[in-house]
Amino acid sequence: MKFIEKYSFLLTGVILILYFLFAYFLERTSFYWLLALWGSLFTVSYFLLHVKKQDFSYLAGVSILFRLVFLFALPNLSQDFYRFIWDGRMLFEGFNPYLSLPETFIELGKQPVNEAAELYKGMGEMNGSHFTNYPPINQLCFYIAALIGNQSILVSVIVMHALIIGADIGILFYGKKLLERMQLPVENVFIYILNPFVIIELTGNLHFEPVMLFFLVLSLYKLSKGKWMLSAIFLALSISVKLIPLLFLPIFFNRFINNKVSFFNGAKKLVGFYIVTLITLLATFIPFTSGEFLANYGNSVGLWFRSFEFNASFYYLAREIGYLFRGYNEIAIIGKIIPLIAIIFILCITFLRKNEKMQELITAMLLSLSFYYFISTTVHPWYLATLLILSVFTKYRFPLLWSLVIIFSYQAYANTPWKENLFFVFIEYLIVFSAFFYELNIIKPNFKTKLT
Image 1 (tube, one colour):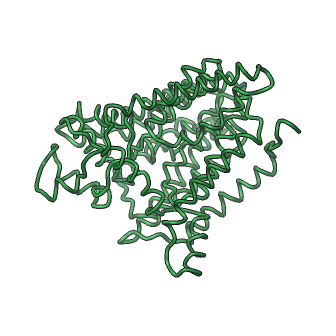
Image 2: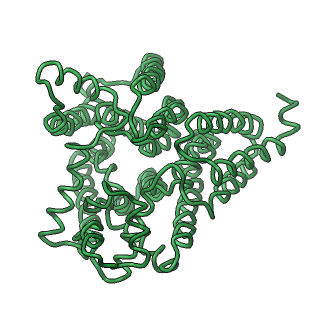
Image 3: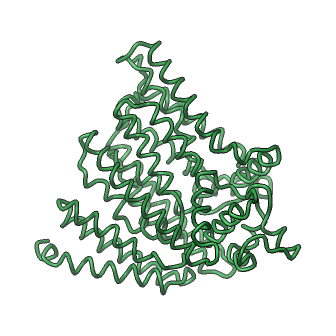
């Protein structure tokens, strides 16, 4: 290992070259080339982290440098960014992006935004035929990109890259501070910051999880300092980027209602926390609110449960059972049941664990979201970013392994038209569940009630 440490700058150079190849020469249909680059990046990054983990400044600097490689690159593993640019330009032109479909404008031969035809072609018919489901703070990011790059797709992409890189720098800063408060090793933050999955899938492919996670980490940091009102505001902003932190709301119960404070004072703060969160969240939606908006947005979010399926685990088993007994896909029924099962599980986590300390609270979030993804109909790779950042503050490391093997899900895009190979899905989840249940057995989370 001393030999490797001696050549740490060489390791950094190799990683830079691999990211450059990934950003500017890779096509997602080239699955085995993708697999080779992905595996190489994880391997070399592991050695770099291992030999330089005591040099926080160096790892922080190279983590930002690796992200800058993607600054001028169009995403090559996702086409969602075309819809982001469309929504941002709709706002720039004075339209409410929640009230119209790109498909409608194109079919009528209208050009509501610059480069409308190119953006519609890029996002694809499926994306263009559904109402946008990106919350208001996310839309603000799209608007900023339109404000600066309204005439150029590339300039818009550069702006969005910069926003995401800035959010990751914020996560690095406040993640380190939260780890210090929790008396955990500060180098844990590089499980997220230096992770090739994060750099490629979020910075490279322009998924805005880092903006959501920045506000979430900031919220947790403020909560750790007892500033619950600021924590609630930042939690609401996190939800207004991506809705997923809504799942965490019940879990805060024992943070406020515990043996260390009187029930009345704890309940008063808990209710205040929820009220501030709700008011802040609603305030971000008010500029867009109308009856039509509520219908469109609700329908768009509901589609993820009723229609879409990708890289699922237990859902695919339930689907096969449905085929066996009913002869057709039961996603419309199963999709309605999944949120109910998730809510029941989260309530169990809330009331059957002592989620008072920060590590207990964050562990409960990690376990709850993991369960939700395990039963979901759709698990896109970028969804794992939330699990990964939460794991930084816990004893669990299975999300790190999942961030490596999630690449198997991209085998679907090697087929024309795209089609999942369930063998690769099986291998992915075999590895993930093996690691998960192993850690569950070793760590043995405490599910005892406060009465026992």
